[in-house]
Amino acid sequence: MSENAVDLLLVQKDNTWELEEWVVPLSAALANVTAEQAAWAPPGGGNTIWQTVSHINYFNQRILSRLRGIDPGPDAGTNEETFGGPGDAQDENGWSHTLAETKRIELELREAIASLSEADLEAPFGSSTETIGRELSRWMLHDAYHAGQIVLIRRQQGCWRS
Image (cartoon, rainbow, N blue to C red; front, top):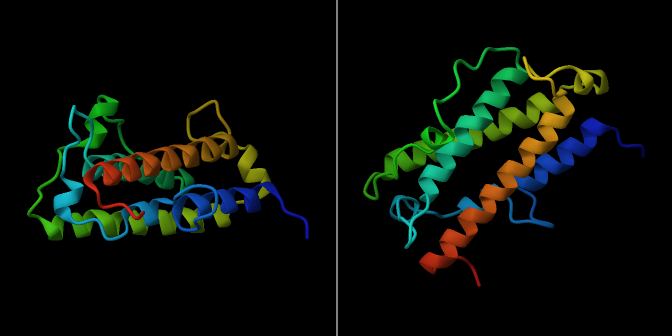
């Protein structure tokens, strides 16, 4: 069976979202996280899990919009703004909504990538000088990086699997 670049991007996407092979995927890193755990601030500073997920959702929704040919709107003023507030440890509904958005965006991104052709991957990514293929490849590394951060925070909390 011959694989093309879209197939390889889908393998990469599946491994950063749900298939645990080389790295812990985002869905596994977030499994069973409570609002209290999501809003917990690491000692010495750093973002909460909730903030990290908000940041992921911000950028992933922008990628999805661009893939659909929709203007994602203006960029956040700074990267820091994409993380938002630390979250509310008592707001299980808010946390559940954030996680539902993450899952929705991730699944829609997979569908959008699967619908691409090889020629689409060579097209410019929005107004960027990068191609869609290169941008998607780099973006998936971003998700994997933040999944690793979430695992480290969960280890600090003592709530990561042994």
